[in-house]
Length: 145
Image (cartoon, rainbow, N blue to C red):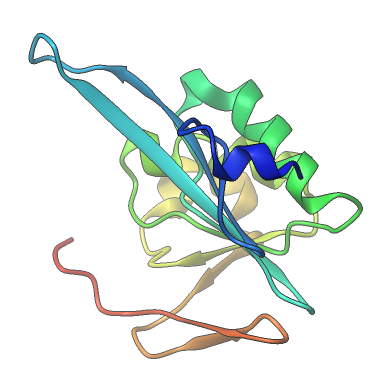
């Protein structure tokens, strides 16, 4: 991980020593505006979690960023916040790349999208916690569904 990531204004960027922000931008439907697609990777001493998956158009960059940040660590959990393409479009790709990773969150409808991977889904409720080792990841109620 290079310190220049924190200084360039581009992604990927370290927003804390154990939290990587990556993703990319695309032209929005409104001329002159960009739509930003982010995902965040948190490393605890025991486990790691990816929040959102990134947009498929940024797959190679996001994969390179994740692999570089993880080093020899595995990706343990993937949290697609919802089923919209920029937030979950790479879920199957990451589950295939990291075969021990578990998708967590509101997984109620995911059997419809990825029926062959239901054994890797873990439904969590608001208030549930994943122990990452030196920090906890707590699930909050969704603002809308």
